[in-house]
Length: 202
Image (cartoon, rainbow, N blue to C red; front, side):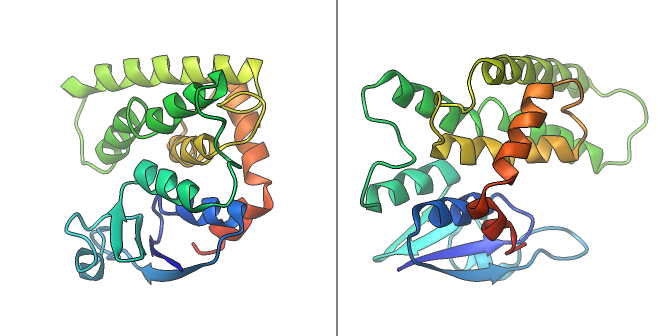
């Protein structure tokens, strides 16, 4: 059985959601952030040197990083549900968005999140870069979602799980104003039963 190390208020919700969508058995070990520093606890560092969530344990393997974990779990699933057929156009769209979530989109969102935690006076050098990247990314995403219901085309996939959690962080920072297609998409994703079950873990 897959063990998921789940940190509250983290992207490990992605893995719980994926497992719920697939109907695969799993167990959860909870870890709580330090209430003062908001950092992960020492218990997570005992599982993996990076002390980050998500982490899974399965058949002697300890694996970190959302995208890698998602691909590993999909390889354990009995069907190709949530991943388009390899070689198809939808498959390469799936790959693009699976990595976009933590690559192109992840950096400016997390940078903005961290900067919002600082005591700041005036504009800082990184502000212009972050704003440019966020505007570019959200315009691209919104235009794609104006043409299709999901990131890999017309079928829900694990790429949607990756992207939804990143977009939720952006939404919590009030970065999605004026991007109506993204807002509509988030509502659709948050109405899925598997999503609700995963979110119930906190």
